[in-house]
Image (cartoon, rainbow, N blue to C red; front, side, top):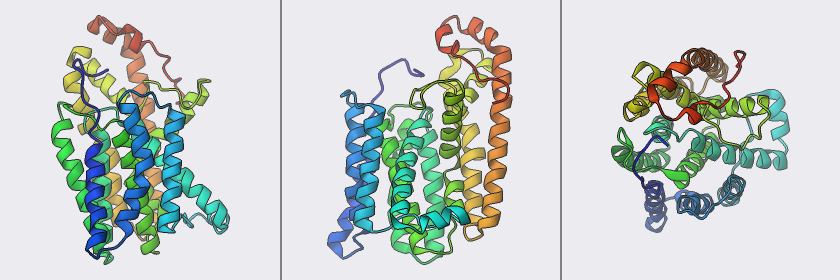
Length: 337
């Protein structure tokens, strides 16, 4: 809705091509890990691409495809999340069946989270790049250069895509790209957690802070408003930032500017800063957890302040825009949110 002209939604192909290149390393004597990740990616990528091409794949079916991809990854890679640095949770995860189920749930959730935040030019791919860079640094510093090499290829693919997506939005990741990005980031994180026992799961939450935080906020907001959690709305944090900027920058006519500007505001605070903190605290779970909750408090406070600002100035925004009153008339969250 932020674009006037039709825009291609097949940018996610860059991730499939990157993983195909990584998978080819298997035939040249490299680890089979890249091949297995590539094979596990196919179900969720295919479901997302079908939606992008107009075949009408429902959110539930896309989520199911993400779960299937996670199951394939568990079977091929033979790893799952068995520790979170939270004693009660870790006790439950000591049971293999519970751990596998939790891993599938978390992986599918990561796919959905990256799709939810893919609402502005450069946002989802920027988060992916910052998180992948952080994982690359951790992998290289712990002696796992093969994992770092895979991640560098993913970063290169996302960087090439970003040249066309930001700031003008000439092409989008689409559902195939956003879901695939979530899957790749989740499983390369799990691979590192398996290879580096000292690495904290809180580090992963910091690396992908914004998608996780915004997803839980969306679930809370929709349930509080009596709506199904899978029903889309226009109250995500990034949409709130863009609306605030529209108020300041003379209405929706300035959306070509406010769209990428909102990304440049969000990325440093809620993507780059948490990822950098995760790198510094990758083997210090207590400090990483404290940092995570600190960013969470900042995120929540910013959202509450943003809601109050937009509610106060909503009428002036509609008057300036002269159009789009229906888009802005959706129920706003109450002050407590």
